[in-house]
Length: 203
Image 1 (cartoon, rainbow, N blue to C red):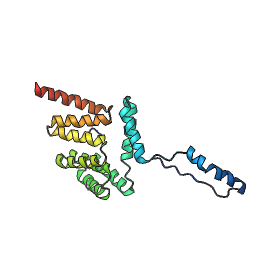
Image 2: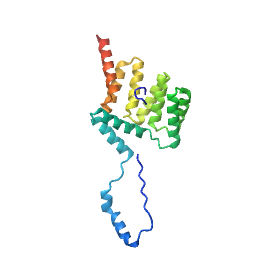
Image 3: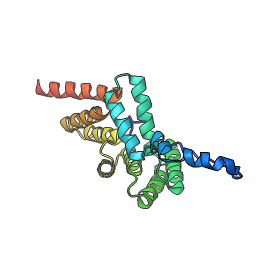
Image 4: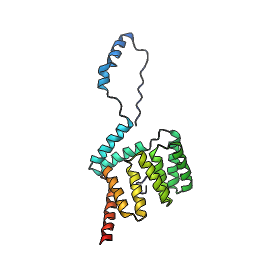
């Protein structure tokens, strides 16, 4: 949302025309011993789990930001060229404050890819920019059902809550952000401001 700015594929080519004398060696290399030496490729879920674990443990701000960027890059992969193109067009429209056009693109994204968490998060961001907080919150909640660790969506939720005067709920949402991404400075600053505001209300 506003503070949140908002896989390499390796293809091996094996040439034909191997000499018959080389065939036994090839069979030997591709046997059980070779399979043990070459572990299976990391799945997307395993990679995300690893990155989130690293993000929670990292205490260097720049290193944490690099890990967060890797997570965001993974979130942006919808698996559909059409959806990716619609997301790009929506992003450009949002930058140019062409909100109606951006909304059309993102409506299409959520219809074509209802399990794509970033589509819902991006539309939540747009609706927040349009001051449509009720629908923005609905989209945030949909994104979080699909990816409960989406620190961007959680930060968006906190921003909506704060904008509506729900200070304690906003503070709780930022605490959830920092449980996932402890080195996110913007969330740290927001928590301090909200805690000060609550302390002032109680004075």
